Length: 166
Image (tube, rainbow, N blue to C red; front, side, top):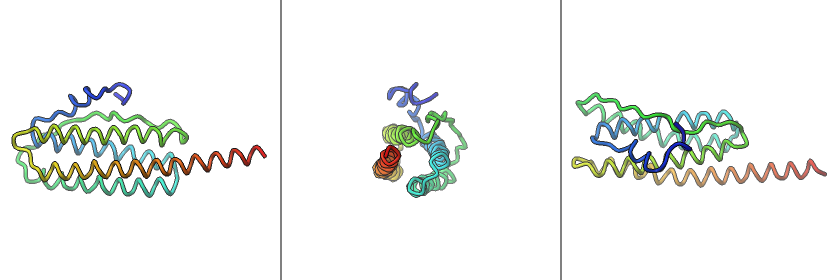
């Protein structure tokens, strides 16, 4: 399954939760898939600016995973819910940032859908909702930073191409 196979409605169905345990489990799975995608981006790009932003994103996601693990330790249920990795894979350095932005937008949308689904539960915890809403807001900030790095890389490539023609 990949982004091209998913509609927003498919994503809503995939991420609809019926319990706090399911919300936490799917959230953790989503975060883990995103961390793997970030590691792959760092490897293919091999760029200090990209690496710096990726480290910030990973730190932010890891904080959320830690929060999930703390909450899970207080729950009696031991249910684990699987979430397929639906992020696109990187095929080249030239397209990696574009693909990552697609994946990260999907990640951000997924957080939003999970939060909305969780908030609709009778026993939803407003603190949890706020934590994930903050994560979603931070995701937007990181997307802007990635776009800025992408523009710098593209400008540098254009300059190098122009100099090569001389």
